Length: 234
Length: 234
Image 1: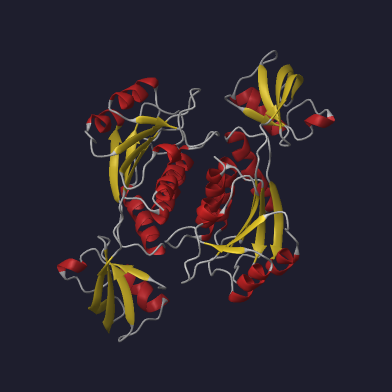
Image 2: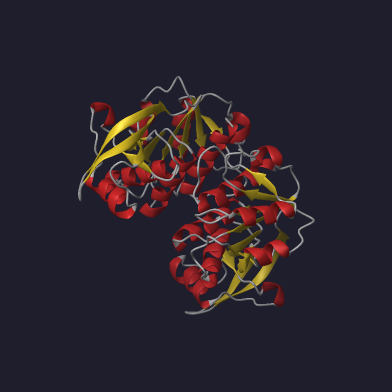
């Protein structure tokens, strides 16, 4: 499949591409009336469609076929502090979506320097990565949440891990994570979690994990955890 | 360890920091005469040093202690096409160094759009990542080499893999790679390797591998392969 187009309102009967997607489809890819394109609604479905109208600004189509993306037997939720440099967390979002992730929550911790997230920008990055990797499910991107509020929530259904760098050398995520679970992994800011934050997580039933013997940047740790959990389920 | 300084000529008796490192050490970190700093020569050794002179532009020191970085039982060589967008391959270099890699060769393939590499920029990225992850060995960054020339070389000592996306669904790298080997992984450009390039590699004893069920960007594939080979040896 060469190109994947996105129309979130497909199931509500929106049989056209957004102006941006239309331009890409008609101007860049030179698609014409009668050509076939593949779309996704970002909600788990792919659609094969026939272009019925191709004007300058709008590309209308009719659905020929609809099929569901293969269901995964596991669920990955990464809760991570934004990085001081916004580009770093943005590429992590792109890479996690490519590799496979279901939810990303941005955590505002004691040592988090960046106190805001460009949600629209993040969504754009995630969308483009979803299309790039030919996926039909757009991950949930949850807004910036304070660590205290986040940790209050009860995640009884999930295998809960917290990445923390200390002298005790905790067990590696690869040996702790079992296949087919709902995972939740916490990754701290550049200054890492505070001892208080760590204790709060441990108190809530999170298990301290290692991602390797070397110090990883926040965004590298998030990506590594995401890839490892996918590998555990390979 | 908070900060790691780099002086490649330490073993040749260069007991001073470069102007740039001096400024960082004295101006930013406010280190003074009599303070202790940690250095690496990028060739496998760490050094604990005492600052003996701290002028505006130069920081001189005397070695107190020298120790070798823990030796790895495996060796990872990634040969990858540069990406059209130079930032993408640069961050891959940064991430691979953080996670652990021994050599990166840039491959000029039939479908490689970028025909040049900013070697000095790459070295800078690798150096900063080495210091960030507190490593003492700077990976070898080999210049841009044509695929044909690269494949001519005999890599009889290494476990040789080529990442290639096709319908045959090759075996996953994680199940093929055995621990403690010298690995060589080839990753192609945005347009992937040509059938000819693939055949040349297979003819040379490379094994076709999969990195997962989803299409990954060039730089994501390179990073994923690097992390997987480190995990195989965890």
